[in-house]
Image 1 (cartoon, rainbow, N blue to C red):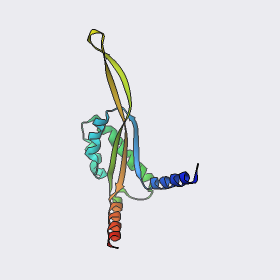
Image 2: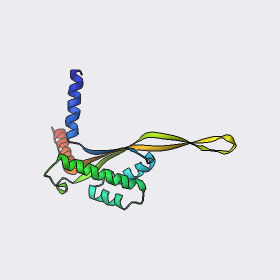
Image 3: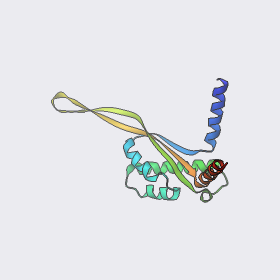
Image 4: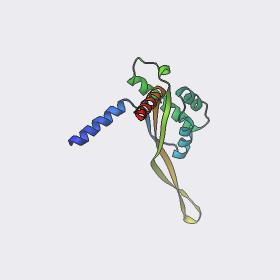
Length: 146
């Protein structure tokens, strides 16, 4: 590995230490249906998001609920001894990408066949702290004043 590549990899590794996220790969739900649930909780604080997902009738909400719990557990693992309430965590970003597609065939009249595409998706849920967001805004304002 070259020096530039190694240095860049180390920077990415350091940046990931301050990011709190969880990933769900190959979820057997259509990406379109999962995006509806993801957009529902994006920007909400974690208590509200958990409550919304728990009481949503959508099947994808159950999977997103478990993913949010996993992201919270990841945050707690990186911040041992700190309280969730002090950091005002919220759902910063939810990305839903399409994954592999299982292609099946359904018989049709007169010897024809229709193709059925069983879609799946990858979901990445990122948490953010409102305290850190406020500090970044203050730093930006101070830089602009200089």
